Image (cartoon, rainbow, N blue to C red; front, side, top):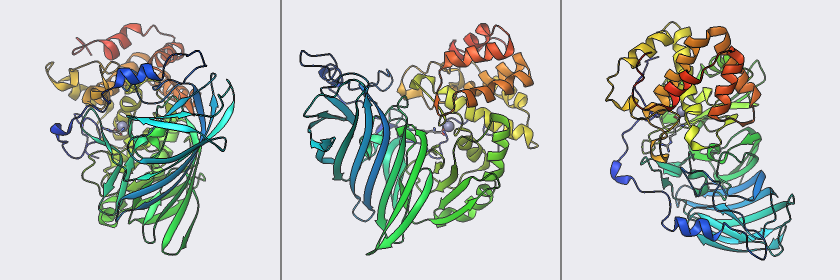
Length: 475
Ligand code: ARG
Ligand code: ZN
C-alpha cells in the first residue's frame, strides 16, 4: 500500500471551489423558530436536531425505529418514485413534526393511515397529523413522492446524496444527502433499521445496505429487496444503481459478502476486493467482532463524486479503491457506523480512527511503523494545512473532511498510544467499539474511557492534540 500521510478526505479528484454553495437554506432562522416553540394548542417538533454545523439536519420530537423504502428508478430519465414508511415514536406531545426532504414532489402523507396535511419549506417537510400524537406514542408516517433527485452541494463543495452517473446513480449521504432521496430524520443521533425494495430496469442492479433478501424480474424490471437490521444513521444508507458485476459469498465467519463492481473498474478492483475478508478479520482482531451480519463493496465509476463513503455494511467507492482506502472504509464500520457521532464536530472520532487503522495496517503488513508515519507528519511546517485547526474543533461544517480531522486526528491516537502503551491502547480501541456498539459516542466519553483503561490523567495530552490550535510544541 502507498502511504498517503497528507491526504485529506478519500478524495480522488479536486472539487470545484466555485461550486461551493451554502447548503443551509436562506430562511434558516425563520424556519427554526417556525417549527420550534410550544404553542397554546400543543407542541411542534423542531426543524433541526440541534447540531450547530448542520442546524436543519434531523428534527426534534420523535425517534425513528424503522424506514421502509420502496423506490423505482429509471437511469434513462433520472426519474425516481418512492414510498417511504417511517415508523417512529413521539418523544413529546406532537401537534406537528418535520422530516428532511430536499427537492422531489410529495404527493401524499398519511399518519397512521389517516391523511395528514403537509407543507414544504426548504429542506423541511412539515407534517401536521389530524390528531396530535401523545408523548411515547408509536406512529407510522407514509410519504409518497416522485421526481428527479438532485444532490446537494456540501459546504466543502462536494456533491452529496443521489448523484447521477452514466448508468445509474451513486448514492452516498454524508453528512446531509439522505434527504435528496428519502424523507428522513437525517442526523446520526437517530439510528433505525431499514428495508429497501428497489426496482430498476432489467440488466441494472440496485444495491443497498445489509442482506439481499431476494430479487425478481418481471416485465423488464428487476426488484431487489435489501434488509439492514442493525441500527443505521441515515447518511450511511445507499441505494446505488448501475450496471454491475455481482459477486456473492459467505465467509468462514458466516458474514454475507455482496460486491457490486462496475465492469470498467473490475480489473483494478479485483486484487483489492479479494483482500476484504482478510482485512475485516484483521480489524476484528484489533477492534472486536465485526458489528454487522453483512459486508461487501460497491465499486462504481463516478469521477464527478471525488470520494468514497463507508455506507453501512457495504462502502461505496467512486472508482476501484486502493488497499489503504479499503482498510479505511472498513474501519469505519466500527468507528462511525456502529459507534456513531452525536455531533458533526466530533467527526475526528470517525476519520481519525479510520486513518489510524490505515497506519496500523501498514505497520502490521511490512510497511512503515505508525511511529514513522507520525514522525513524517510531525515534520510538517507549522504554517501548513495539517495544523490549521484542532481535530476536535473544525469550526464549521465546511472543514469536517479536511486534513486536521484525518491526519492530526490519527496523530492524536498515536500520541495516546505512546502515552499509555500498546496493551492499554488496544484495549481502549476495543472497549470503545464494543461498549458503544450500535450506539453513539462523544469525544468526552472517549477521553474518560482512555483515562479509566490506562489509569492515567490524560487531560493534558488530549487538550494538546484535540483541542489546541497550531502545531503542538513537542511530540
Ligand atoms: N467519510 C468519507 C471518508 O471515508 C468522506 C466523505 C466526504 N463527504 C463529503 N461530502 N465531502 O473519508
Ligand atoms: Zn473516512
